[in-house]
Image (cartoon, rainbow, N blue to C red; front, side):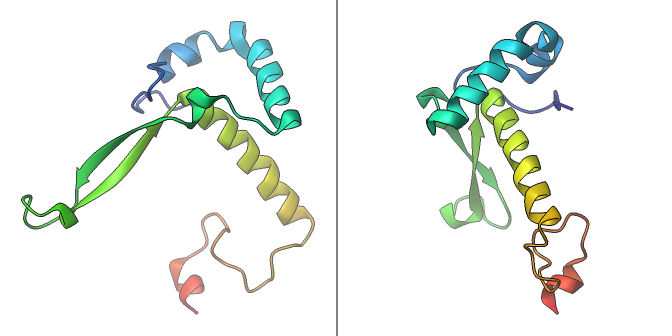
Length: 115
């Protein structure tokens, strides 16, 4: 599910609009994603990001009290989610992660990661 509350990236494609027209653009996007994966190339526009400084704590006058966030294209986020899903499932199903691996397991406790 594409979350509609996220900010747009440099391409200004809104996630709400993308979700509303998903049925119409699903085939072209599938073809574009497939081509990108086969060729090993990602469109330049998907590599661009708006960088915003988000205040963390304490004195707002100090630069070190801000962290950067990168707003990328929503279409790029969709491709990233697809890749993550298939790669994670592949590693999980192939018993690749050690039973002691805890950092990439969804909903695993931070206590397990520390121990």
